[in-house]
Image (cartoon, rainbow, N blue to C red):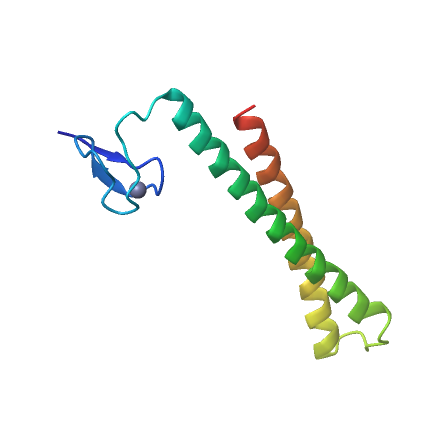
Length: 109
Ligand SMILES: [Zn+2]
């Protein structure tokens, strides 16, 4: 008897289990087609999640940018530093999310 990860919820279950005791996914007759379908859904969810992150990053970036240039904040002031921080974090976050998206899409195609 070995411990495997449930293809539905990724929690550890016995490979002899007929049904996952975490998410009730039936493990019997789980053939390649069903596995592929589950993987596809999982990938779509992951891409969707990454898209949400990139959206948040964009808002952070644009918000910081807007605060810095259209609100006439003094250089060196707290608000300016916050704006700079938002731009920097938003930018880095966006780059990371884009790379992760690229890797996710490439992996299973
Ligand atoms: Zn499960």
